[in-house]
Length: 411
Image (cartoon, rainbow, N blue to C red; front, top):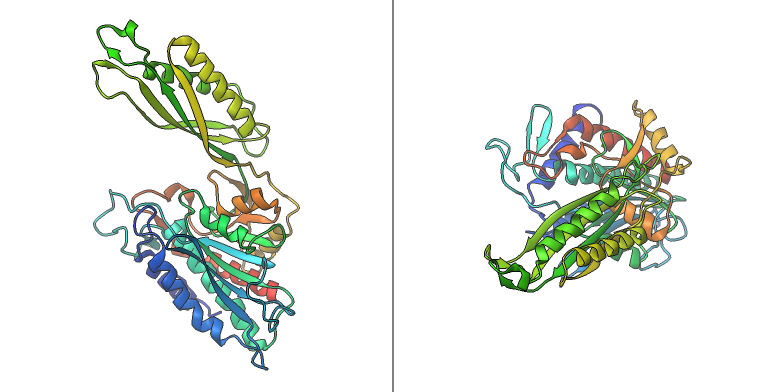
């Protein structure tokens, strides 16, 4: 690594380049950004050979969705290097970064446009600057630092390191799921994503369960409502029942209180007609012992209550998202290694929960991997908003800590 201002310039310049590439989801998606990252990595991977000419690293692509490609670069461990392995399994350390951002949106200041990548007042501004192109830049440079150390040594390390760049994280995380199916991620190995974490290591997540709840009624003229069955009225009864069900839940010691949000509602087609259909989209963030099975029972009770309250209606639902809660792991070896790396750079790392859901939470939930956490530059409070930004000092800190961590893994 270089020192001082050159490090700041390097990570900030790379992060700004990433911000200027539109990878919004939905929107432009990740294609152009994936091409950029692949072109940045390819010469570094190609140059990484042992003294006998054996490749020390691989670069792989995986089409997770039509036209949407995940990317993985891996520093091979001794035994895999030169063994002709088409695709190595999970690395000992995977730096996991998603390439998509939320939509660009409105409300950006004229001097800090969404795709500007402007540096001002010690901050990098633009869509994805903190969620998570700043973190992606830190991980790219950390991987390059570790790869450079291995290349200079001229032989494969005992442990492997991967940089994994996923798609679709801002939707339903099908990129991470594809990487799991491909064997890139699993129960073994440390997995660290670079989501914005306010300087903390965050390894705990509430569960995320999504519902679509429908009410079917009977149309009638608004002047003779007794001849119909009001689906909107029934839906309101169901919503209130679900909301009351959350009001008395006991909080979890680490994850806090379970929450529910009714994010979108639709129903009816005229103010003067009894509505025969209504739908609500429900977002539940569940802390143990409450889970999707408990949530199903609550929704079924809400439907029964609505059907009794408004005769003639019929309710139904489907689960559209089902992610389990991830409880903290205070004995995590990854957490201990991250703290050691941070102390080596002059920083302390506290712990906390993550209010959203991340790719590493998907790995923890599906693979039962207890060595997953988030650590990245910026604050989640400014993500997904206009005038999103990340402190340059955060970029420098996270790049330094991740570089030390990755280099410690490869020895």
